[in-house]
Image 1 (cartoon, rainbow, N blue to C red):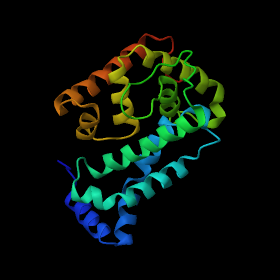
Image 2: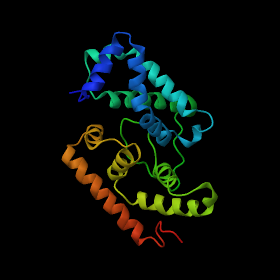
Image 3: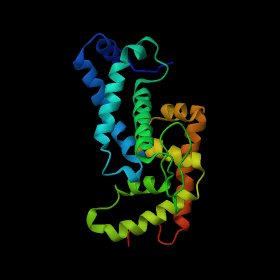
Image 4: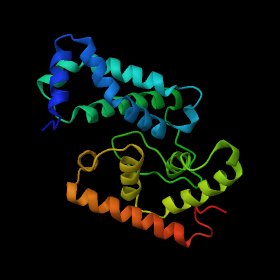
Length: 212
């Protein structure tokens, strides 16, 4: 089932028949979430060499070329299809620039080994913490990043990925369940459990993420 909304299906039909305005509306509706995903999952070694905007542009061009195919047989919701294409573009760029090189993990832990580009607890901690501090608090932010990253490292990989999908990428519970191949009820329980687990771990850390 594609599980698209009526509005999305209507725009898709119009776009498939050459209506560029409808196609533009579809991309605009999902652009920010896609950008957030690319930023989170872009290998740090490619920062400065790969612009997330270029990744999205290439993915959108690929989606445009394959739009008629998708409309004929939608196998997933439209946003998840766009997300998949953007993820595939990221993987292609990693192979091109990095070859078989592995991420230098150090304290980093992979969030979850799935079909999307691999990211880490360090990347998630940096993105989550980016909302909590300002550039003038660089030293405090660095210390908190270590605390948050170590807390994430102690969690189950699936729980880390659920936090990334729900909290950062802002996928719905249904979208998250589909991406992870689990039931919606299970995804909901795992997300709530992950939040509780993260708070418990942070609570045991000296100082946690509280203001000094």
